[in-house]
Length: 345
Image 1 (tube, rainbow, N blue to C red):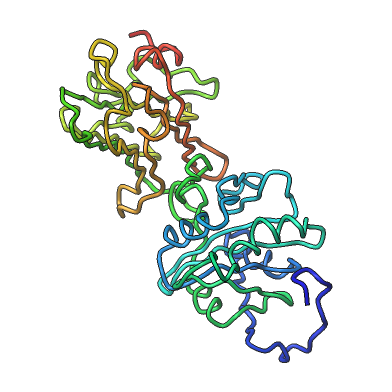
Image 2 (cartoon, helix red, strand yellow):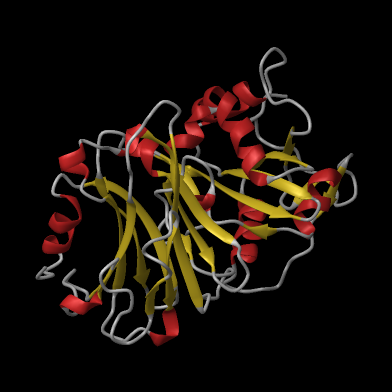
């Protein structure tokens, strides 16, 4: 039977090798959304195994690079789709038993696309997925292979923006449906072998209103101003090689709609320095209390010729805070960035 031929009707207990997933009964939660997708899709393509989700996604994109083109579905941080393919939606979960990528193919999906871009690639005997990762198909509602069920039952949905190469997608700050009290943004770097000279990588933050204007000049937190007036933004140590800024979200004044983060090289123009001369200029966002990394990406790989960029921002929404990576270089350096947000420096 072809992958997308009309499915046969089965009695509840007659599907060999498949088990029924229990309903999480958590209305409005990411877990419930994934369960609903499994229930409503005509076919569910399941990539799973007993390992780390980042390793799973790296293995998947190596054989099916279409996943690198993922766009967010509506305002969800947990659901993605491919350009022009609204009837194919995917998500990812991870837990103590392993990780999985789940592709929901709904009734009117483009079956040729699904076959050529996903199924035909991951299932190829001469170049598809390799252990520990497995590809199987779940059909008949929420009936899935037992190995997948074991992973899924103890797993949690993962924000797609936390996966390698999808850093531009939004990432919730905190566990699903919650917001962490404090978030830390850190920039770290190492020099490339053979590169000499003094490099000083600076991390800065600007608290802005809904119109993208800084609340006041002293809401720019950087090496010359290490604390915002409300105390919600705190720079750890401007003299440290790896700089960090911690944001106390509940302490932010209600007028703050966004906290923008900039990464720049001090006196880069005079010294003719750029991010590409360094190795692993990495921006990392993590929960200050637990240390859980929410997202990370390599600044030097995004803009190797730049010496300043708007790296990303924390956005206030009606329900939670989201971090959205930008990776947008700025030729005017830190001074130009701050002026764009109305800071008088």
